[in-house]
Image 1 (cartoon, rainbow, N blue to C red):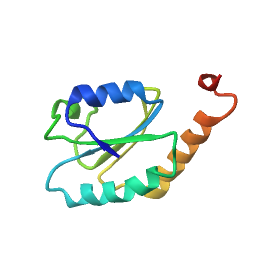
Image 2: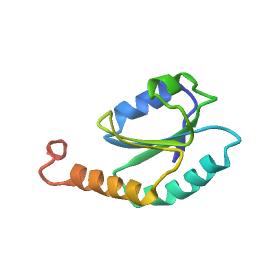
Image 3: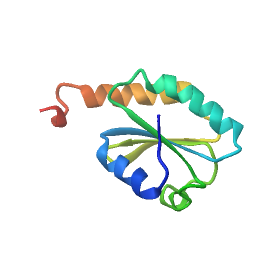
Length: 115
């Protein structure tokens, strides 16, 4: 996952990537670190889903943009729209199902962007 450092970079990446998983974390958060360590290998299985993370301390205005009240928070964006969110207690089985679902949809032959 790519680390970004400011709101402008985060927002640009959301607009740029058809599928993007965003991890929002805070410093001194061991749970956040563990979620990142578990998310990176999971995400590597999906070539069509990009991943970024950032620290709220670097981009505090993103807390308001994304209505984030706790960390870690994972948000999946599809074509710039939030389609899945998990916060604090991440259910990786559920996350895996969502990644699989959106990956299959976006790579389907009948998906308009592939033509």
